[in-house]
Length: 157
Image (cartoon, rainbow, N blue to C red):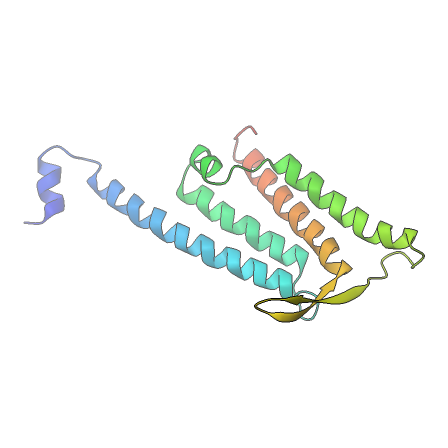
């Protein structure tokens, strides 16, 4: 006789559902971290290889959508307390300010500049103004995708 059947005979009808919930909750947290790290990798590699802010933002949103599937909206809201309107506003501001600042310094619009900085662990790292623009796209796309999913899902923000 198994433990599940013994518990079901004792009157615990939600045993199977609770066991599945523990498995789904644990695996969704692990997969969330893997998808989020891959999203950051795509964002960082986007200046030299395919990827960037748009694809990285969609992957970041899909990682949070995975948590929304495994947990309810309020639980995810407690885990990740982020206002989607603020994320979209910040992303649009970065995407507009990065090329506009360079325009005011005499370079053509969307002409990106770069420099190199020394980071203690990584050594010399190239920093582009395109990275600021891509960060804006990343935030805008992920915030918009999450807002659409929550609005279609029927939750009020």
